[in-house]
Amino acid sequence: MNLSATQNTNRYAEMLTVDNAVLVMIDHQAGLMLFPGDIEPVDLRNNSIALAKIAKMHNLPVVLSAADQGPKGPIGPIIPEITALFPDAPIIYRTKINSWHDPNFREAVEATGRKQIIIAGIDASFCQGLPAKSLVADGYDVWSCIDCSGNVSPITQATTIANLTQAGVRCANWVDVACQLLEDWAKDPQKSQQLLDIYAQHLPQWGMLGIIDEARKANAGKS
Image (tube, rainbow, N blue to C red; front, side, top):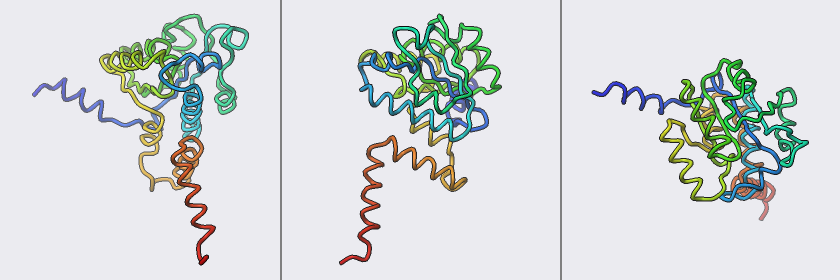
């Protein structure tokens, strides 16, 4: 038996946990939201806000970073829906393309004491991809939220996913992350309802089911 291969397989089978996860969001700035060509800006914004709400729901530590100058620069501030959810989280402004090379960013992640990194950044290939691979190299388990990151084109998305997985990063989406962190629908009914509310707000399909359910209730007993 190849012991190292078995250990690697087991590592990929592990789920995110509320006690060991931290959310890292990089460069979710208004100007950069218009940059990707593999996802509509409105969908990227919707998904990113949903991911932030999931972290807020579970009280996860959050590390926010933006390109140097932030709102004073040409790509603007982090979108307000995210900063409003985490008013006490400092925004780490940096010039480093690989955020992990910025001492302040690295210190903020290490200070959480957590080893499971949920990471999203615009775009996925470098602003998010470079630190994701560096984090894996330094012993962290990393989940890359592709649908909260965006790429310049569909072919760039495909090459990014291949590159990340080759480096040991797990590619995910915000719904995947949400389900892993919830773990069990019966464990905490309040948390389960909170997640259903986020689904209704950020999954159009789920919102349509809510309309049908409300109509059914309103018409119950009517002939």
